Length: 125
Image 1 (spheres, rainbow, N blue to C red):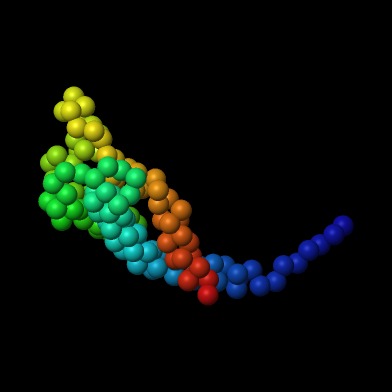
Image 2 (cartoon, one colour):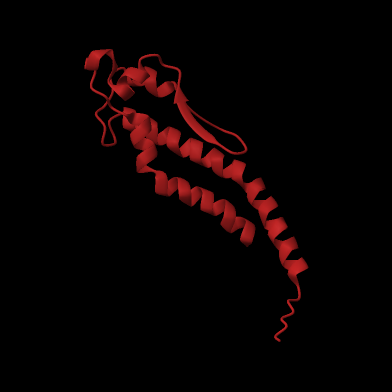
């Protein structure tokens, strides 16, 4: 018969609980950074500084792109009515789609993960 005794599990559980709380406390800051970063990236896309074609009426669209965040999310959006037609080639494909929002998200998946990893890393320091 072999018996194994593990000491210090209570300390490990306390450390993990503390790390979880710190990670959750760090997430809103990271979501704020994600929202701000992606807002800027979408605006650059609209201005034609990314792969997508430059949009028309760029000034109006760019000033109405907003990044917002909460405890567990980041969102970038616009309230400009015609933006959905630019994004999805609406009006019977009269407008060429530009997918400023979708392509920005796809292009920046690694960057978003880096921001979230920072919340974990800073809790483990």
